[in-house]
Image (cartoon, rainbow, N blue to C red):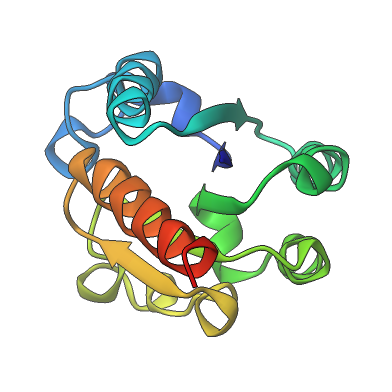
Length: 148
């Protein structure tokens, strides 16, 4: 089973930016923790980060046929990334949306997610552990589907 883990704009700055909101771990540290968990779940990961919506879309379009699910933290694209939303829908893969912070208890503009309606689940406010939770939930769901 192969899962795409997609990190949107500014997530390359984790560990440096607003640590009180986003935590101390860098993106590389989060990806390493994800890879470790993926090994225990027998899941192959393909991770990708970009500050550009088009690059995220290109990655989804290029990788979707060889994947069974997507975990995405769209960053600020959460609130207006309609072309990213279209690419996720077109992939026909189950999607779990992750946010390090609780977007519903921050600035008003952050409380709208254009991705949420198509996501099987939205995991928010758990910091880096939200990614691990998302991987566990997605892997469990995919394994359940294949065993039926």
